[in-house]
Image (cartoon, rainbow, N blue to C red):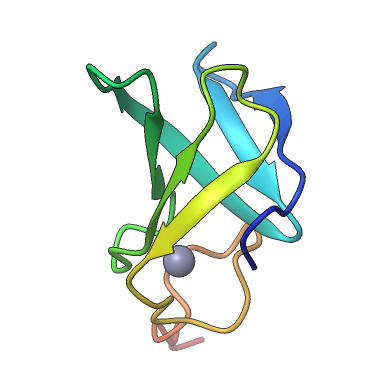
Length: 82
Ligand SMILES: [Zn+2]
């Protein structure tokens, strides 16, 4: 997945999100070496990426996603009783 293209989108709360394929990452911080760290928006997931300072491409991916889909449903294991 390295060198994947990042698309910067804005969340409902006005925060920058990095969209890589179907996964969304929230901005964490810009490091001293200018690389930008992003963490998966799925709250049960600790996969993160590093992008270049221009936020245009993935330099490296850290960890693995603990979910298959990262859509509107952020709690894939949640089952509602009707
Ligand atoms: Zn994830």
